[in-house]
Each structure stands twice: as C-alpha cells, then as structure tokens.
Image (cartoon, rainbow, N blue to C red):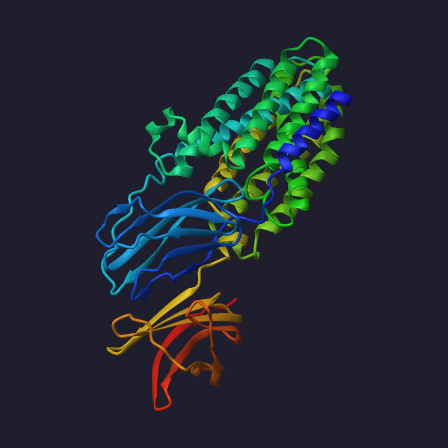
Length: 522
C-alpha cells in the first residue's frame, strides 16, 4: 500500500505541476492591428489572456520576405518581437503560433503599416495537414486508457476472469502506439511543420515541452501498468497495478486539455480526474462482458450484479463531474447550438443519454432475466454491442474538441479597430471589448502622411441616434506610449454607435473625424 501511495503521489505532482488559467486568446497588440505608423517601431507586443510559450513567430515585411533578424522573447502573457531597423515602407505581417497552457497551439497574425498601407504577403502554412492524423491518434489513446486500462481493472476486481483478455491487450497496444504518434503529430502541429518532419527530433522535443508531454507520459505509464496487470498471474500484483493504471488514466486526462485548464483549476482538474476514472470503469467493462455473455456460465449473473452495484455511484459521479465541467466551459445555453464546441457537446450529451438508456435496460430487464435462464444471453449481447458502438461514437466526437476552443476562451476577442482619415489627418481607434458594458478606447492621432499628430487635447463623443441617446462626451488622457486613452466608457445598449474624435491641435485649430461601429447584443 505504501508503494501505491507513493506512486499516486508522484503522478499527482506530475499532473498538477502545470498551472494555467484558460485556453489562450490574443487580447491586444502594440502597435494596434491595422495601425499606420510614420516610422518603424522598435518592438511589436502581442498580449494574451494567459502566459504562453512562443512556438513559431514570423515577420513578413512589405516586400514579402520572411525576416530572420527579428528577435523574440516571452514575458508572462506578452510576446515581444524586436524589429530590424531596415524594414521597407508598407504593410508588415507578424504571424504567430504560440502554445496555450492546455497544450494546444494558438495561431493568428496582425498587420501594421509603415508610411502607407500596401498589399500584405500570404503566409505559408501547414495547418490542417496533420489534423486528421491527430484526431485518429487521440481516439487510439482513448481506446488504450478506457478499453485497455479500464478492461484490466474490471478483469482483476469485478469480473475476476480473463474473458476478453485478447481484445483488452490489443486496445492497450493500440493506445501505446497512438500515444507515441500523438506526441510527434502534436509537435508538428505546434511548429507548423509538414508530415515528413516527424522523422526528426524537433517536433518531439516541442511537444514534450507543452502540457501534452506529461499527459501522454502518464498515459503511457498507465497503459503499461494495465498491460502487465492483464498478463500477470498474481492476483495481488494484478490488482495493485490495475489500481495504479486506472488512477493514471484519470491523472493523464487532468494534466492537459481544455477542461483541465479551465478556472478554477483546484476544482476542474479533480473533476476531470473523476470523470476519466468513471469513464474507464464503465467503458472498460464492456469488452469483458461481451466475452462472458458470448459463452455464458453460472458465474455470469453474480459478475453482472457486482458490476451493476458498483456502476451506480461511479456513473453518478461521472455525470455530475461532466455536468460541472460543461458549465465551466460554456458561456450560455445558446452556445450549445451556436458554437462548434457546443455542437460537439450536444452530440456527446445525446449519445450519453442513449448510453444511459441501454445501461438501464441491461440493469433492470435483461440482467434479471438471466436468473431464470442463464443461457439466454442473446438480448444482453446485442445491447452491450450497441453500447460499444455508442461509446465509439462518443470517443470519435470528443476527439474533435482538440481543434475547437471552448466558448469561455472564444469569448475573448481582440479589440475592434476603426480607421478614420482625411487628406490632412488619420485617427486609429481601438475599442475593447466592443460590447455592452464598460469599454476602453485607445486613440492614435496622425497627420495625413502618417506622422504623429501633436494635440493639446483629445475628446471622444459617443451617441446612439437609433435609440435617441444624445452625445456622451469623455476627455482622453495622453499616455506614455504616445496614444490617447479612455477607460470605463459606458456603452449601455447594443446598436450602431456614432463615434466622434475631436483633437485640439492649437487654441485656434481643431480636427474632427467621425465613424460608426456596431455593438452586438449580449
């Protein structure tokens, strides 16, 4: 027991060593995305809503050349790119690929122009070239953790039989190979490399440096323990290893991914652990039960009764943990049908309801019928086989979450950019978050040639004519960055707001530019 406690403690340290807040999203850039500057800035700063690790940062200048003389460094939530001094005039592109705390790559780009706006160069990408393989590898890992590890636990503790051993071992082997493949493929995705580069060490090292690395290592350890437990003749050793294996399956899932890194992590990580262990217990029983019902003996009914008694509290915890995690990920009920993540969750919930219906049928009707005729197992076999197909559908659907950020992360949007200009002046305005409530504005004042415009005062005026809201005036404050800032500006209603910027250049000269922007409903 001391050995078990020590290994579980070690797995706990590995699992919870990564501290994070959410799926990363870009929240602001400096200079602003789409801004026009008179001179080359010294740096470009990308600010995210959590600490990120830069994977690939590309600077494509106005001539379409990828520059290798731009230095990159990370500081908590900010990526700082030091620019070369000899950038040509025109539109520059900064393409970024960073690693979120949940182990998934987050990619995008921002543009800024020096002197004037020109056509931006296209950015080459390998995105999507390995997505299908990543999805298949993830399903393979699930098979190893749930069918392999869960099956070993059922065989040693509940069934006390070797029925279905061949299928359990096969699932474990598939899981082990899939875990290795998943590591290399995710490394390719992180660095945006083509598939042939899986033969070099670079993508493997990159994947190990993310939270996915420890997660897959724990999964491999869990599947290896389950494999040995399934083949070991000693009941005591097999049971010990199967407990470690099923705990490792839970820790592996809790070490990485959208759900595990959702705040507050002191709650979400244990919930993912409980959910994963519950799934392994339930799914792991299906293959051995099919094998036992295929060749029924008098021992079948006691095994089914033991499993039914244990499954009730396990499934209850599984469902409650899953419900809590779904609430943590979703912004609203509408997200179930309005977002890709929500659609996947809706499909999963539908399949889970079907699975619960089959489980109830087995427990309350088909299993009691065996007390009268233990050889009439055909209806039960058919029901369990349908359960297996439903489970396969759930695993295939859930593997798609790897490519879909949850609504809680997708809700973080970059600032809304407005560009107003005349022959004599250009104003760049960033509105964040451009939603009903309290918003912030950043105003960049420029002359017609994109050189900085000095002003004594800058005033912002908002109005919503369609609802009869009269002009709301706020005076801006000049920041150390040379931009004019306004914070906590109220936007009480959705609609098409009218914005006016008045820049007092001298006591006798004022420049006024106006534009409209849309504020969506909540």
